[in-house]
Length: 265
Figure 1 (tube, helix red, strand yellow):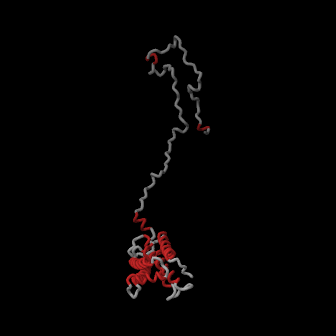
Figure 2: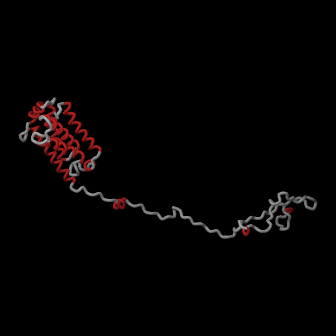
Figure 3: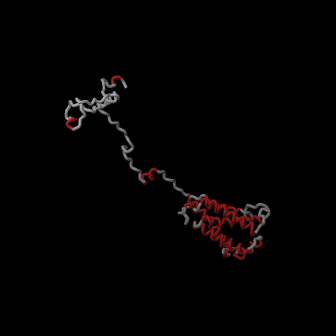
């Protein structure tokens, strides 16, 4: 505080003289006993109490300036964007092009081939061996329970091929065809010594059909199918990998437990 701001003059206060003596009671100054003796209305009357002066801080007479403070409530309210506006700003995913058409062609090729070969084994149509001839062929190849193996193999090819064409239960259908092709590859490979790939004695047909069935499991059937509205039909992930492993395991276990021969010898 500067010297100019300090109050000037003597300020009288009862606290400045804590030992101040009260007026002496005597015959000339008796104690007041009535309101008239107190004489509150007289300005010259002696008062037992002393008026304490009011303290005013330096600069108290100056007008104060109100500080303006902007709060969050004073800010203008911004409208929340609607769902349509947000959707308009997002990037539209690119189309699938001819991908679904290619998957349809792949399904028709694999499913159609499996279907006609299964009908040959099941009914004997198109100069096929029929169910009896297929059973005899499996028994000669060393399969146990050849009758049931013939039924399961023929039905697996027919059902799997038909479902692949329709694009219905596609992973299961492709896994069924894959399991049949694994056993067909092992049977063809075991019939001749050494590794044979080229047709007619080789295994290229069985390998190609089995690999294509596995590809369909991993890619899904596409939108041009009865499974087209399912999520895994266009974006398969872990479930498709599990089905692929199960299809391979089913084919390998069938050969090991019902035949047991080493196809590579």
